[in-house]
Amino acid sequence: MTLYPVILSGGSGTRLWPLSRAALPKQLLPLAGERTMVQETVLRLNGLPDMGQPLVVCNNEHRFLIAEQLREIGVSPLGIFLEPVGRNTAPAATLAALHLLAHDPDAVMLALPADHLIRDVAAFHAVVAQGLRAVQAGWLTTFGIVPDAPETGYGYIQRGEDLGLDGPRRVARFVEKPAQELAEQFLASGDYLWNSGMFLFQCRQFLAELRQFQPDMVAACELALARGSRDLDFLRLDKEAFQSCPADSIDYAVMERTQHAAVASADIGWNDIGAWSALWEVGEKDNAGNVVRGDVYLDGVKDTLVRAESRMVAALGVEGLLVVETADAVLVADRSRAQDVKKVVEHLKASGRTEHEFHTRVYRPWGWYEGIDAGERFQVKRIMVQPGEKLSLQMHHHRAEHWIVVSGTARVTCGEQEMVLSENQSTYIPLGARHRLENPGRMPLHIIEVQSGGYLGEDDIVRFEDVYQRS
Image 1 (spheres, rainbow, N blue to C red):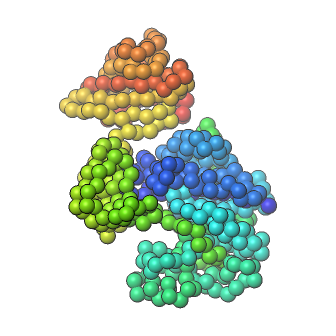
Image 2: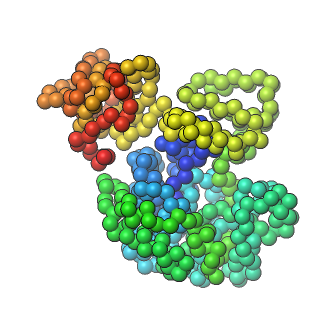
Image 3: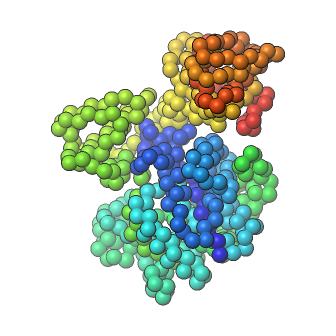
């Protein structure tokens, strides 16, 4: 029996703005350590027996970042499924179960959100072993976190009868996020656990239950897979079929309806990192209770999180704050208002701004670019192209471009002409000219791009050829 980890990476992490944004959400960021959340999620699986390669379900826009981050830690995924639209966790798990079952009739799925922190990996492995015992006995298993506070932001699971499996118990009921008084009662009783959103089950049993409760979901996912297509190392689902799929969570679609739900109690140092206050809670604190990252100076500061990403941040005589600095935005909030950060994101969306979507540095499959300056009819960018990579063959209707090589070697196509440029050399790309930038060297290529024209938006790109198969 092989255990296949399925990494669910569809979240956006709006409460962790300005660091987490739509194009670079929290699971792709190093929030609690040096590695990103998705990398930590995959690496903590090391040491589990009979473990297959991970299968990742993610947003189409994040596919190259996911692939690169897995490559950095030496992991070759079993597959990366690209969701054309978000449909919650149940369809994502259904896709994975269908795919795994087609290759292994005894496949067991361990479904894990990509953005959770687990500090006690040994305890995590032990509770997965408990869950496997329940799965082998015919139970669909979830993991309930042993609570240490009357938390009102989580759903709860009430434990029922002992199943004689040395740990896992039948699920008595699921409870939505409770009011404070009820949460206190749950904590005092000792019978309630936080709902972690992690699951373990036989793929065939999960699908059998789902066909009973949500047959339309299974049918839509089967069609999305059948009509899907390979795109490099990715499996691109059929958009029309997947859009017709009902949106639901694993909890609602199956676990709250089945008669075979079990829960294993997990005391594993878990946190879903749902807001900046959570990072303060789990972070390493100084003698004054401060959690600091980056170039930070503090004087008379207590119980505060300060994170500096691009410049020095100084704080004097404040207490209980969240201060997060990025290149284009700064958040200052009382720790008690951490959940309200989503209101800032809602304001940015309503105002037609882009700070909720992109950082100043935007990652692409070939490298990245970042804005340096902009004004009326001009824009300046810094561009990095990885060794051996190249941009699409493209043209622009509304802008011309000047390229100056800062370091590395550039192969430039402009119309019918091809040239190789080295450090301090430059070229001009006229408006309407077909052009391409490549890095034929072994070192990263850095250039400065100066755009001029009446419209400088990223959507003014007509692609003729693209090795990454972008439209």
